[in-house]
Length: 175
Image (tube, rainbow, N blue to C red; front, side, top):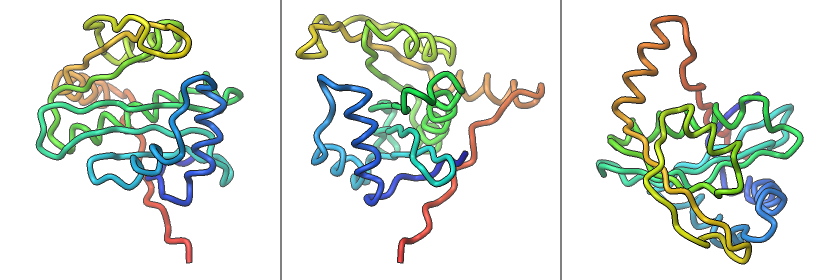
């Protein structure tokens, strides 16, 4: 499997996963295309045998104190393999490279698996936005990560034989 920087040509595959993962509140293709092309965004795709199985996005203005995890999604059949964690860690590494000190996100209150992943990486709940996800009336759990503490903990884990964020492979030009 390979995690690489997303390209505009990946939009259709990303949107297929987006629509399957978030059937009632998926982003539009136009919104996703704008994110993929924004200088303030960093989007990744996870490929297996040349097929995109997941994607993730970060919004982080270089030099800003904070960043936002915009989205992480995987094909349903590929969940539970650690690929979401790999994507999350790659986004956190990018946020650190952009000099962010804190990372924020919202997660659906009815998605305990995603919430548990974020907690396991050090995110803490700041509060809730009632009925944030429409039309489902599902609360958003707002979470925050002290990125400097995460980087220090990750460095300590790697020195003790833990895992580092995955290497990001640049997308080759489609000519």
